[in-house]
Length: 395
Image (tube, rainbow, N blue to C red; front, side):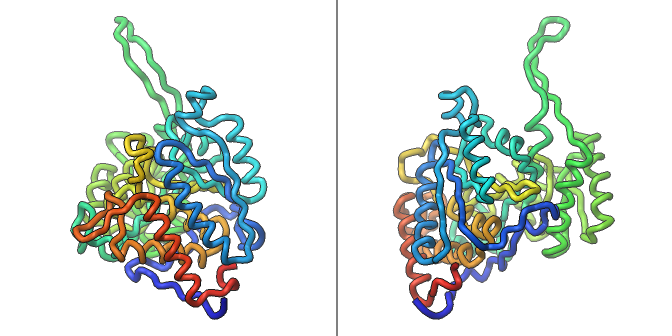
């Protein structure tokens, strides 16, 4: 093969840069040299189906580059692991993750139920979650929102991942009269808050300079006050325009006026809600993807949807979110933007041709299954690389 790799791209999408450049300076910065070690946790429900489609894409790249790619597969996670081993994140899986991280690899994760994702984030201090919300113009013919509402929308949702309502202490009890109840106690510390706000502010400064913070000032007053205090600390060293919104208004504005947002940061539970709601901008939860990051280079990539047990095994799941999380992994953890860009180009090309799973089908789409959509993306990837490619740009 000879020549330069020319990648057709969706012009409605921004040129992607590394989100992880906004993480603390203690982060391990990948230099793009050496083997790529990918630890795969296929998960449950539709996990095997969508993860297999993404790994097929990675195999295509592996076949045309001199760069060594090593894929290792771990065991059960989530509710499946809890039924078998009594906990959703097993000691065996922890050891598997540690071995991948020890070789500066990254985890590529399918959906896992129970408390798997929360326990994994806490175990490895994956405090920051990035969820890109940049609709593809090739999907203007689908989704619940007007196409003109989505033009040039480009948002990064930043979520604090290891504190707040998803952690703490909870249980059941009875009051003095013996009436049954439940309690849930949680907290945030100032250093947790300033850490995630610092990431979001640095990211906003690298982009369009606008930071939105989602709180609930009267509903959750003291924690909201702490976030505002942390914001004042961060603004001293990061000159960005800041707006503070209550979470209910933030969710509404995300759909009603998405152009107002650049970077939006929030606590754990609020971030969960915002990212799920934000997938409406993409056309389907099946298009959503994300990465979870520590401050020392550990990373886990996943979709923005769950295990979808109701459609597992039916060959109807949308694999695109999982495939785009693979592209995100190549860019962020392995400094391989060419690989990421050509994957995105293959995805947008196939979607533009009208091949879709049912969740993103337009009026004139040809509805295909998980396997066929994945194979068509792989074939297109072969074609894009084969036209003008050489090993040099991809290696």
